[in-house]
Structure formats: C-alpha cells, structure tokens
Image (cartoon, rainbow, N blue to C red):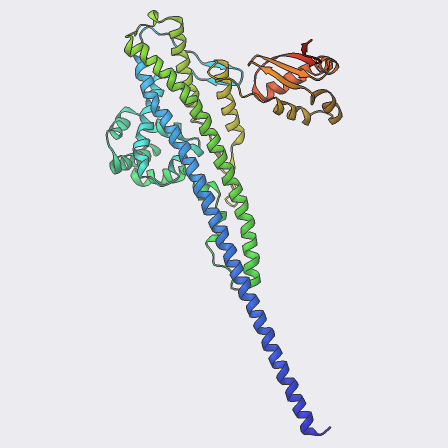
Length: 429
C-alpha cells in the first residue's frame, strides 16, 4: 500500500479516536454533573425534611411546656381558697396501687404558682423551644420553684414584656450560682440548655454533615448524601416520636386539668359564694370535694416533674424519649380519675386479647380466647360472651385468672368476670 495512503488512513483513525475520546469525556462530564445535581438536590431535601420535623417537634414541646406552666400557675387560686378554710385537717400522702401523691404542702404550691406566673410572663421574649425545653428536661416544676420566692417572684410578676424577660433571665442566672449569681448571661445559658434544642435533642450529629460542603467529587458527594439521608431519617424518627409523646402527654394533662378546674369552681362557690370558711361546717361531700381537689393539685404537680427526654451520653447519638416514665405518669393519672369516678376507663377488650395472644400457644388462643367477645364492662365487672357454653365454661375454668392478670397489667384495675354464651339468647354460667 502506498505510503501516503497509509498515512492518510492513520490520520483518519487518529482523528476518529480523538473524536471518540472527546465524546466519551463529554459523556462522563455530563454524568458527573448530573450526579452532583442529584446529590445537591437530595442534600437540600434532607435538610428540609430535618428542619420541618424539628420545627414541628419544637412547636409540640413548646405547647406542652406552656400547658404545664399554665397548670402550675393556676394553683395560686386553689392556694388562696385553701388558706381561707379554718380548722381543716392535714391532708396526708395518697398511695393506692400505682398512684402516689405527696401530702399537700401549701408553701411549696404557692411558690410553684408564683414561679409559673413569672416564667409565663417572661417566656414570650425567649427563643422557640424554651418552654418545650423545660418540659423535655422535667424541669418545669424545678424552674418555677427557683423563681417562686416572694422576694423574687412577686417582683418579676409585677413586670411585663422585655423587662419581665430580662428579670426572669437574671433571676435564673442568680439562682444557679449560690454566691454572686450569673445574671442575664447565665440565665440565657440556662434557658438555652433547658430548651434541649438541636444540640441536645439530637446531639451534635446533624452538624457533622449540614455544616460541611459536599465533596467536589461526584461519586463521593453522592455517597456522602446517602449516608446523610440515613442519619436524617434516624433523627427525624426520633423527632416524630418526641412530637407524638408531647401531644399524648399534653392530652393527658389537659384531661386532668379540665376536671381540676371544675372541682376548683365548685370549691370557689362553697367558699366565696356560700361564705363557708370553717371546715367543721362543711358537709361530708364538701369535705371530700376539698380533699380531692388538693389531690388533683398534687397529681398535676407530679406530672410537671416528668422528664420527657433522656439525654444521650454520646453526642453523636440521638437522645431518647422517656416512654416508660411518660406511660407510667399517664397510667397513674388515668387510674386516679377512674378510681375517684371522674371518668370511665377507656377499656379495649381487643387489646387485652392481643396481649393474651403474645403469651399463649396460638392453637389454644384461637380455640378458647379468640371467640370471646366483650358483652359489657361497667368499670368493675367484665361480661364476656362466647359462641357456645363449652367455650364459656372452659375459659372460666382455665383462663379466668390469666385474663384478669392481663387486664391488671394493661389498666391496673381488678375486675370480676362473668361468662355468657349464645344459643337462642345470651345465657350466663
């Protein structure tokens, strides 16, 4: 083959190779750019998801914290009414089942109510999360006690707006150090710590990736964002759990508080309208009303002490919601209300069966327990209905104590059980 032709073919091949290499390079650059764009978009989605969940959790916790402060502040009215009653006995500590309420302490309750009023007046100028932080740390009661002294609390309570906020911060700071105090600066620090905001609620983990720029390498950036997403999902799962717990606990406190308000109104009528101030002139019903109202004060006071968040010892891990303490407090409140007939228990027979199933052999459960339906429950007696007399009799003989145990575990109540069966009508054994 002539040399010029060979050279021409070689040049053509080289040119084609150059074009091919350029095309391949362009494709890789586009893929890298697309990967970076995807990484950036996912990064923005991660941060947006976290910020929204954190905002919601903060709002829910603030709502709970403010409700607790409102409840504690309302004790002032009861305290003033209670002081007007002469010759009244000392109300002892209440203990029954899983419910324990300390003896009524008038000085402590008065300080709590003053302190709560101080914080309610000054908290408006504090950052979002402040009220929720007190609730999260179980510090609402402790904080208001620190501000509830006559010399400090009364003075701050007379202020408003920025002045009240500044005085509250200064009082918190002064109360934190025995000698000299720390003033507003320390007060701000205490409030900041109490908020349990991003830094304490989720630890430092969020800042590890939100504070750094994405890698300039596309594949590395994409991998980084995927790890970020996993961490954000963990954090947001915690924040959702925290929101759920806050809403659940606020609902329980609100329920008790509504009953307390009715009792307080009735007590006010007896003392202010009827003019009764001597315990010896109170009817047995009026005495019972007074004592039960003081117990409701103690119950609500205890609920303000519950620590919602357990701080993680590892700053790279989320805190945990104190579910056990919350559920115990809610159960105590519900038990007290049912025991004193303020409300009926929210009994769910299907929930009892579900728990029974977890501890029994499936074949046995489906033959003898599953067919049982709740015919009636009046708070003391549970009437179960079976499709046949054989099932009713067998359940009564072999499973009565086990069913009662499941109900005791779930609702902390003792019940009697009647067993019925259906033929042409409901019959009872």
